[in-house]
Length: 207
Image 1 (tube, rainbow, N blue to C red):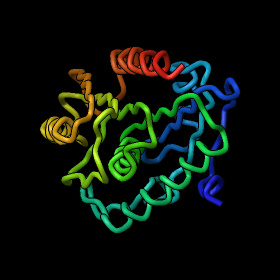
Image 2: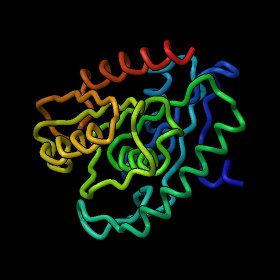
Image 3: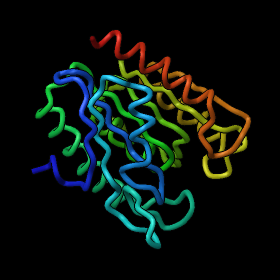
Image 4: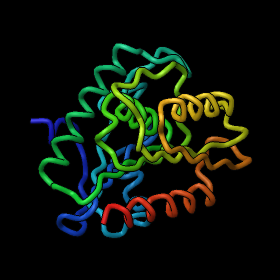
């Protein structure tokens, strides 16, 4: 039942090969990151869900009450629902490895799923995540490989909160890499190259 719990697109890759889940930013949809996903993981089957919450017409994965102020009850709902969606696709595809990539609001839901179910993903890319709360990890992040990308002048995701997230992840045992650029909330080329290198390593180890 969970496999279709979100409106989503699937871009088929090699049968039994890697599975890459991509999660869009606020106001985008399930098409936003498909081409980036294909570029970064050419052999992967890509699954891209659309956020099921609308904020003034903009799709998101969970509600917020203000900029950087999350509706934690709705985040818990969304996290549980998304974890079920991801598990259902993994069970159906039986992939060689499971990867995740999210941008902005998509990075936030991906991070929340990783905290709730650390075993789901082999490697995750969090582009400009904003985690303004102390994560409650179910179990341990030991062995979880996570790339965080961020802008030093990001007005939406302040650098001090990115550094705090990095510290949380490391303290819980995650293998964390952080890639910075000097800009704001936009994705720059060095982030894409860092994601390409990071996922290439994860794919080589998962093959």
